[in-house]
Length: 382
Image 1 (cartoon, helix red, strand yellow):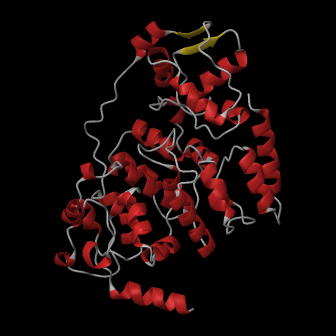
Image 2 (cartoon, rainbow, N blue to C red; image 1 turned 180 degrees about the vertical axis):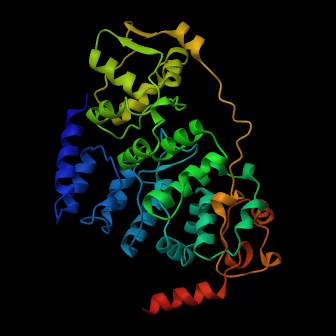
Image 3 (tube, rainbow, N blue to C red; image 1 turned 90 degrees about the vertical axis):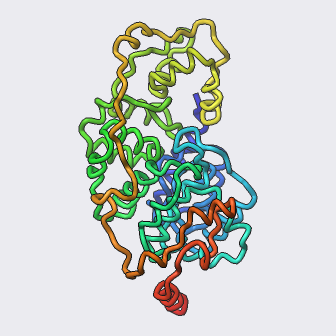
């Protein structure tokens, strides 16, 4: 299928797990093609190196910025549009640069960004609710009520998915005291598992977390076209394919190449197989981006089977009662450390519509409090 890429992956992780790994060698292996199965911030040997940005972006993996060098490299690549493309699996409109997990260091750097064009373009192309939340969390804006002033339809990203992303990141990556099960007060188990998988399924550690903490995961139907993200070698996909989601009803039958047949049945969900049957082989172009020797060219021997059985057992999930937003008290029952009166909060929605872009001028779009400025001035001096 793609033995070179799998061999490179073995060499990559062997080097990565050394106490003093060689970033140049890791970058070279990445350029030749690897499967990056988890974020590089898990590895102390390279966590703070600027090549983390290149390797993460080219392999569509989450990353966190910790240093000035990493921030500068990120903005340099962002402005050049290098590695910038939409993600096959993820939040709608999500691109590689949106795999950045925001921390306080990045917020501080962003607020001090002197290049206004870079700043405006970055915010405009990002999940605005996601950035806004971390501005609130780190005391840059002064009330979470500001989220309720914004019209969800004016933005590229779904606010509900942003809520799930934020809570999972804080629980899983930042080890904060968040109970993911509180989300079940507002959404179904099916929605919870599918959305977490959709966003975080590219991280093998997140998949392990889902398997270990949600014993019903193997009884949930997959709502994506893919049962597994594409940044994993075939042995990993084969190992996990029976542990998450219900088995497919439909079957990808390709008698000319049984390895491809097995692989496709592990990768595609019923929804994906329906699209192959009804729309054609567009999805193979996506696979070929990650697996260069997939080798499909509309074979006459290919069949999608069990359609009648699929029609009989298909059910629709009622999501009419789902109501997930930033006003859910059990999820965001928190107050900013600075008690600012509500009338001091600017209506961002009107400002954004007026400007037609998601501008971030501190005097117009949010209240930047004195305590925040003093705190960061003192950090800079230290």
